Image 1: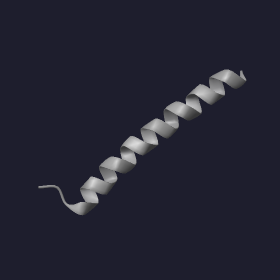
Image 2: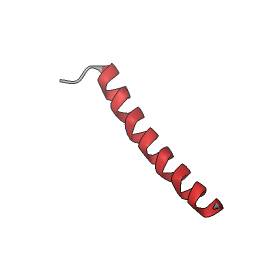
Image 3: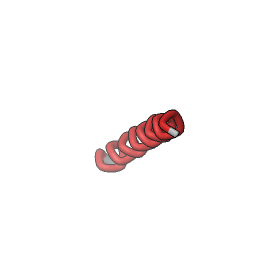
Image 4: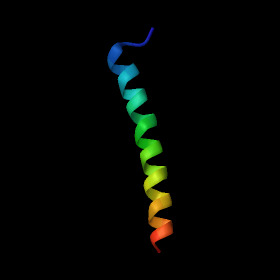
Length: 31
């Protein structure tokens, strides 16, 4: 079983990936 910390870290990583993709799209649009 996963510990609470691992679960939170996993969700955080997914969130960061999404943010990075959205940020990348915005930068491409600005160029």
